[in-house]
Length: 138
Length: 138
DNA sequence: TTCTTGACTTGGACTGAGTCCAATGTAGGA
DNA sequence: TCCTACATTGGACTCAGTCCAAGTCAAGAA
Ligand SMILES: [Mn+2]
Ligand SMILES: [Mn+2]
Ligand SMILES: [Zn+2]
Ligand SMILES: [Zn+2]
Image 1: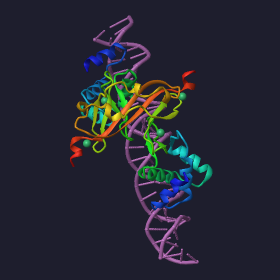
Image 2: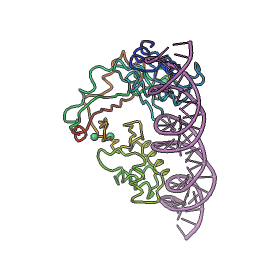
Image 3: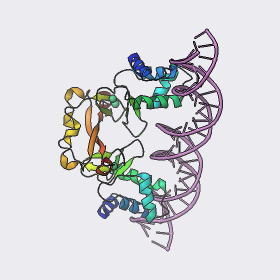
């Protein structure tokens, strides 16, 4: 994650305490936090950080391609640091748990020419829905 | 569409003018309107209809399985009367045009056992992204 | 090391989408 | 025709996110 910060500094990013804690909070696997969750965790380390800065920083990380936005429900957008390896999402409909998954094959090839309506395709997003082990046994 | 209204009346639905115009507005193919678009079109026929009633009616149609909710962007939910035949969506990233598409195969079978994390799967939603013919030639 | 300055951060006002509710109206059975 | 449980209404409210003017500060220049 500090290699991330170095990379961004090389791209002209000013390294502030606020940006550092946001990057730290986003470290890990299967991380899909909302902006307010990021803010709460960042504020635990740096109490004066504002919501506006969290939104600014997340937006920059997204446009720099270091974080992707994922919407798993009709509520808040989630921020995912696993931007380097393409993947899809498996969501528990009861507790909201999100796992990164890699289906076999390229989703784009499943859409036959006759179903493309002349579009130029650029990508596909898949959300698998189900119940996680602990929610299934309730 | 009036067969829909009959079916719902058989299920104890009171047939009001408001519900009738909401159902009429949702008729057609490749229809994916936001609640406010439904409200605007319904109000053209029945000026006194309220936003609250449009939301109530759409919510009922969704829980009765007659309409599905689709979120194609980070903005408003869209309401899709094509609830009878399972399908996926192809979205133009520029103008927002949405087409119903049917990829080959069952998306669920593309997720190998080792990538299911013990979940009980219930469905998969795919959004294909691209540019429609007129946006691609700009 | 200090200076300078444009980039960064801040709190709070604002927006858009959606929910909730108490008061009012009405579909449809008796 | 009457009754009433169900439906509709406007407006207040919530939640996620955006915007802004004022204040702060990282980091290059000297
Ligand atoms: Mn992910
Ligand atoms: Mn559709
Ligand atoms: Zn669960
Ligand atoms: Zn287009």
